[in-house]
Image (cartoon, rainbow, N blue to C red; front, side):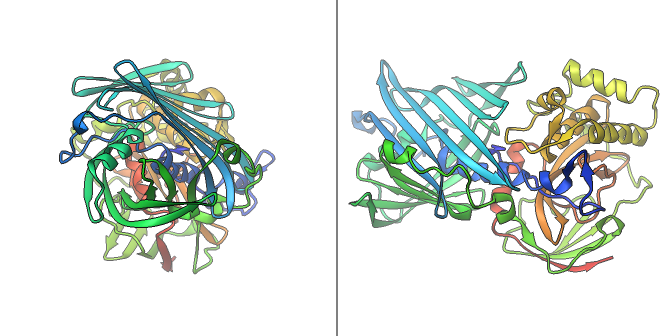
Length: 508
């Protein structure tokens, strides 16, 4: 989400040549760091929403000897450390031929001083064996609203996603029959949870429209006290994209408590208690909390041509650290500013994926195409086209924090956004103009800290970094790329945030 929140997407604060450089009347720092909201909501999604679609493990019967899922309603309070920031509500209702399941979440999130109210809802129609028939997922924050609808047809999940009145259909091959976790826990319990057992599942998340592997380990039996009542519960560890979360499952299969990264907790309670005491002004700023202090002050990042850093605390496997201008040797990462002269040209087939439209980068939409052609009219050279598009995005968008699932069409219509919005719109306009483009997620330096951020790479004979929010091409070397690609790739950042340690070894 950008919430990614759910979504897994990371943005952040970026460097600037003047500490108080202004866009209109807003300081640059006022809109930095919001990218982490999407990744943080992604973590939230693992707890609240991302277990909606889990194919049943092959070792577990879905029939359960005729057993059925019980009707239920569960309220949970959402905390970040000791701050109550929201609630979730889950319901299971029996219906002819299956079940109706609903889960909603409401949260107040603070980032760089501003508080955003984010709400999500998913409604699922299940078959008698609890497998998925269809769903509707919605995320809203302020003026921004994202909706995804899906239905299972044989081995496919047919998805319809909507932004700004533009509805797009896509088809995803399902590796296994998809199940909703709200019904999976009771099934696992009735099958007989055993301490030491492990289940390997496949997860589908509608906000990033991709399947991901997940492991569930039954760790121990533990006593849990909630509202003065003691429960004997199974403590279950869930590992997703390297991120570990813990869930305590009660005797009837209900979730009693869940814990995740950065102090995130969900605790079962009553409806009245879930709705009361939610802070309208959360103390913890998630962007600041996720940022990383630098061991060196980098006075003029724009003038740097080389940076060497040491990365610890994470497994680099599966990340895009050793690509483009970055070279990783062991735990040492070197970043060198790109040359102005192209070094090589990729084969056309290798660039085709970076020219295609997708549900979030709608480069084939008439509005996007018309604007791209208008911007580059009369320009023939690719680098000049890219610079024109960069300048247009930089100058045309109001630098304003948003909490949504970023997409190019809404961004060009609203003419506002932070680094995620700049990145998806820049990519869409580049592709519409025939220039291959990527979205990159990582860290960037400003005011003594590294913040999560989003920017782009455009192919100009070689991949060249470009930051439309900063107006930089190439982007300065304090831009540290961890992943590149769409939301399905950006979810990998959940195993970076809160874990990575960074030390600048050299900067010149």
